Image (cartoon, rainbow, N blue to C red):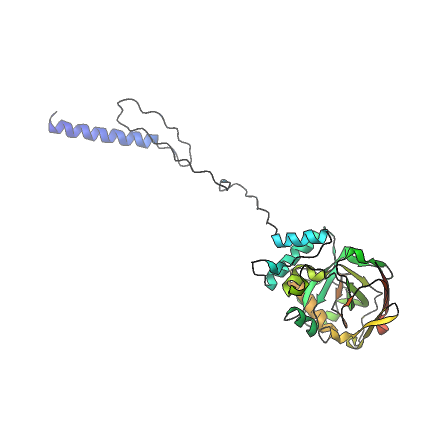
Length: 326
């Protein structure tokens, strides 16, 4: 074959191959069917598409709805819940190799409360470690907050069974009853007074049963909801200008005094303690509701519960009595 004919043949061959390739290219996104090239054909056989290795993830189209994966429960919270439901000593989250700061501890508390409350509405909120002495005991730089479970509310005069707890304690406190919802920080005490409908005597019955009491840290207290288990609220009286810091509290056991305190024991000022509790609770993402109870911390000392009859007097605020049975 002469050179001009060879050159013409090559041009025709290239043009034909290009046309065939353009015709065979499918629109973007369409499936491709690869056919066996004819014997002695000018086109090489098409290579099959590579197959991706198996993956642990599910691949979906871009426009397909994606279901959000349920967050996994922290194993430390699961351990707390298991101990709570079995009425066993609470483990320490600080035993974990993972660091637990205050923010992490409060996140654990929120999960713990949500599970152990079983969908019940929240009865109220509590402040703990509101005295400098209590803060020093647990290495805390300030007070801590927790949630009061609705199932933990007891009536005045009702018997409390020691067998239902691991290390039942008794605290004399003042309770504030909310009149209006609160979903944003409150600026000052003057504004806060307008949101409270009444004040009442209160007894908190926290359970401080932990596996390693001597190693208990503030993060452990927070994550386990500051030991909140049960509480008693007396009859409320209207809010007025009386000085709650001057209220004297006395607790007797079978007629013998076992504790004495005053209103100023909680952060040196009841309204200051309440303001801290409200704004702390809002910062944790809660909306406080009318009728909920806010208790501001122990007046005097925390007392270990023993079987017998207890009477707590709060001066003109009122009094409470209850029985502890073994």
